Length: 253
DNA sequence: ACCTATGTTGATAC
DNA sequence: GGTATCAACATAGG
Image (cartoon, rainbow, N blue to C red; front, side, top):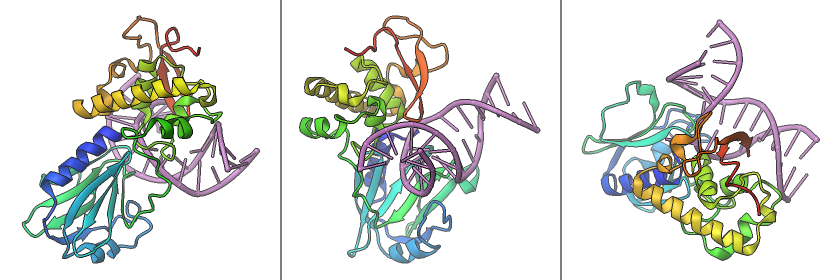
């Protein structure tokens, strides 16, 4: 599921339900999810502490810990979510990383596909500014200029952080831009307009609870039609991801 | 059974 | 170095 809206929802959940609860045990035994740490390493760093603040940028979130402890970084990957005080997953293996609290409760990174991450003291230096907060100047500088298709640029987390496949298709559909168009073709004014649409789409999807709530989403299937003009949507692979767009309305120039 | 698909990201190759 | 492709993972569906 997770793009920026899901990560923000997860962050808010941690903030409201997990802060201040003493950690008495950590299951960090999945060394793939917790790479490059070894088993017990995160546990040693966190047991006896509590989470004290919840942050997010793009799809990444991290938490401060008490007593000058390390940052705990979590990423939901392609199918993860945060479960707090819920019953264990139908398949217990899906809880890839867990914190147990002194009060008996539990926080789990629940992820069928195991592409999520749990790391302490992460390197965030290659993460761009949050896509919902990026300034016009930053957006022009970081998105423009590249010869790569605009869609791939929007999804590059080191350029701006938070836009994934579904949001990118929704943004470009709302902005009526061809996803294949090179970013370097965009004028400063076009980049400003694209930023406004980006922020609006993200705000709306956060408010509505997910990246799947866009108007285009239910039409993103083979043979689907543009919800504005009824034209059959084009489908291709752009930036390595399956892309749907309206070949009539989303045209350069 | 086999092939494709899937909301991500990184390592690798050109 | 920028850019594109593939692999990592697990599950679902045709």
